[in-house]
Image (cartoon, rainbow over all chains, first blue to last red; front, side):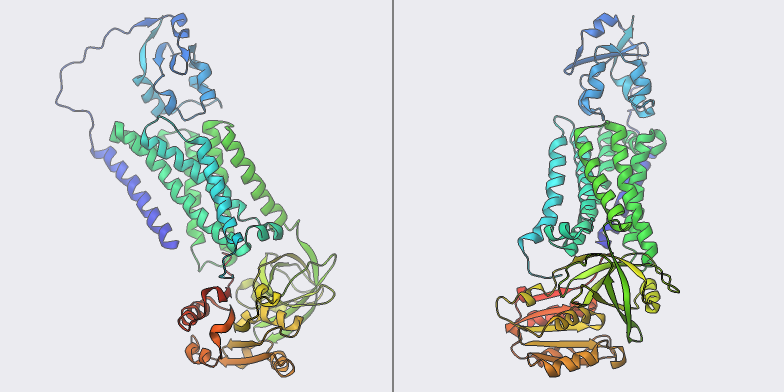
Length: 122
Length: 425
């Protein structure tokens, strides 16, 4: 069992080091395509429109002036569904900033957020 | 430890398996990416095993009997802890791989603590504590007291792991189940066992110096006596006396004699710092006692089916056989091979020699060997009808490990070999 502990611990730290090296040396965004990206004008939504998407299989939220469609993300959210589902169809800035224990979301969550942005709140 | 597998041998692993399967079933993810699913399953599986690991650490005679004995519990305590650790190592790696699918940089961002918030720091702290605690657990040369202190880091690691899950998920049903199981097991162990709330008060009434490095203490009950059978052991913590200062920590001692008034004799050999200090033990010292535990010799004393006995004792391993011989004359024809370094080190030798002359069923063979191990083939060659005997072995691990293959080679059936060794680290 002692050997198993040593081997597994070494493999774990080697894997962590591998992820660190990948972060340092690997690029994921193809650099060949240098044509300028023209961002389409953000679509504006009323809070009443957001409120029409208040279900688990159709979940929008308004956060800090933007509107997000979290329908595909909900199964990936780490917290229990009953914590996040009540915010579907609502202005959820406060929940975003304080979560359920008064703390802010992580920087990684900030990065993820952009992926689900569909427009702005009018 | 006895080799014979009874249905109760499977109780301890079954408890761990049922708990972990229940937890994984309650939290099994659906319709989410593979690596994230794996991260969730390993996290809950590992947490379930950590809770089971703590249940198997509870030192209570009734529970130990139900779970196949303290030795079986400790064996599965070690195994479940190790498997839990492996699963929990996979958890962050699976999360990182889930990020990797999207972008390699995201894998590192998932792992690195400074890109995270405090709930994930708790997870990292728990994993590092488990790592540290296990490293200390496997450090066999660490003095017992320091080893024990480091081992507590594992308990703290479990608490931090559950705090990590609570910070992320809130009071989910599965988590509440794990918190309750962990809380009861940890509380029971700390309050009832380590702080001695469930222990029995005894006091030292006699100390007999057996050899230069071994004493025998008679412990008499201050209240109701516990019922002990020969071959069983108790956990004893010695307090202070007029001049003696006890180390206060529990150590296992096999009972070497059971008195009619409930008094227990235990042999204490100087093997570590605490047992060395115990060599200057004096009467009137108060002790806290837990037990009894173990089933060694229970088959030889219950008397069914008929079998001649071969008992092999090495050094302080003589104590369970002393308890049996002192309790009553041998039920079956019994040969005891008593191994020691030199005659001056052999505790109870005069008493055993006297017993061999008065009990016609009892034969004593002794061997003093200054070498690492005695010549076992020659010794066992002296035993008649060895394949018809039930063999009980108690002594140092190298001795047991040298004897087992030899006995099998000589045709002794696996289920007729029973051995005991203390390995409670």
